[in-house]
Amino acid sequence: MDIALPRKRRFVWSIVAAIAVVAAGDVLFYQRGAYGGQTGFALAALLLLAIACRPAIWRDRRAWVAAAAAFAFALQMVRDPGPLSWTLYWVAAGMTVLLPATGTFDDGWRWFQRLLAHALRSVVAPVLDLVRWRRVRRARSRWQFDLSDGLRGVALPVIGSGVILLLFVAANPVLAQWVDRLTGPGFWELDAVRIMIWIVILVAAWSLLHPRPIQPIIGTFDGSGELPLPGVTIASVRRSLIAFNLLFAVQNGLDIAYLSGSVPMPAGITLADYAHRGAYPLIATALLAALFVLVTLRPGSQTAAIPAIRRLVGLWIGQNLILVASSMLRTIDYVEAYSLTGLRLAALAWMALVGYGLVVILWRLLGGRSAGWLINANLFAAGLVLTGFALTDSAAFVASWNARHAADVGGRGAALDLCYLQMLGNSSLPALIELEQRPDIAPALRDRVRYVRNAVLFTLDGRMHDGGWTWQGERRLAAARAAFPDLPAKLPMPAGDRMCDGRLKPPPAPSAPVTPSLTVAVRP
Image 1 (cartoon, rainbow, N blue to C red):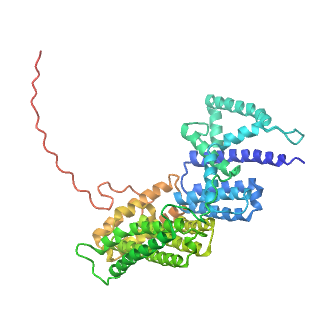
Image 2: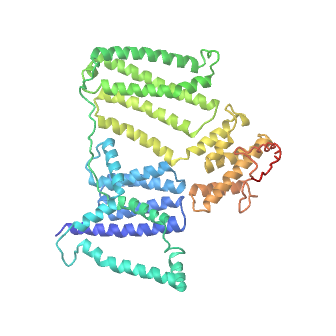
Image 3: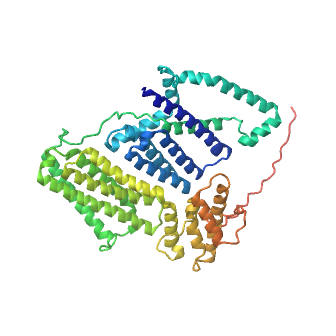
């Protein structure tokens, strides 16, 4: 029995599935102009189609785990689409279709190469695969045919019939009306945007329907044994660790004294200034410490085998963890003094990852773990943090925190930045509704909050009716109408005489009067 037959059939079915995906994408994204949560449904359907076309996925448990993660990110796209959930979906979907063609899961560095090569190849993969299959000649039988001959056999009637139908539709209004009823108005109109949508959908669909795994070019960095470097000796490493520990002890002592309030801040320096100035440089110091340990104390080297040096490294890593905790405390103090933003929340998560990375570096040194283990351990933690950000609305948390801790409502933070809440979009809507309904805020602030809430509602309502539907947006719009039953069915556009924070715009300055000038025309 010829084993090439199932492969050819899978290729043909992949072509059929890709054409179906492009047709459905044309209806959804071009004709109906969808760009919101409908994208999540489309991604979930594409993944189901890819699994159906590749039976190898059914027999691979690792692929099922990756597919479950991809479905979770697709559902998040339905709930509230964003670039992070979009990226994580394609990473998980790519691993779903590539895992059955690989052996054991090696390490994240190799998978980074596989996914990058898969993404780059996907741009030209449909053309390359078609050319490759046209060159394949196999023995013909009653149930097997050459694909190039089959394509040539159907190309002429399909293309010819399409051209004739286009001419008939252009010449016969009755036929054009019938076609519009079947396919929707404007189905036969072609423009550059529509063709680009077809190409993007085809490339995305083909990357899952017919993937071709590529072997990693660069293997895993071993990271063990001796690494001869100029100036790196047992004595220099020992002296460096002693000096580093002393410097870190001074810095950590100052942080404990000032941040705990045991010692008053010097004149001219506030706690917020002290916290903001040192947060990020200290994290850079911790990263340099991790790099020093990775380079100079590789598992299996002479320096890593000396007990005194290992104890100094453990002490230094411990001081680095105190430094990371100090950086996080500095950032929290700065947030309490001013306000919370998405970048500051992400910075806190990044600091926690740096601390975790220091712990696993020490664990690797003491346990003699491989570089692949270190990479996988860090990628696992980073994946958990990114998944948490992707599946939750961190912007809503930021808006709620600022609305509750602002000085305008009795909190210890800075004044409420309503422009920033408006920039967060519908994520700030629950916080704005709660803030507007509080009985203890000033009437002027309530009026400004009402304006910002109306502006956010108007933008959300327009997006929901303009193809940008999301499940989260629908729930928030329904919650706003339940909280304010007097809202009109069609929300009015906010007044243009206010700024982004709800304050009235200042009147324009009077222009200086223009003195007419006397001109004399001189005839030559």
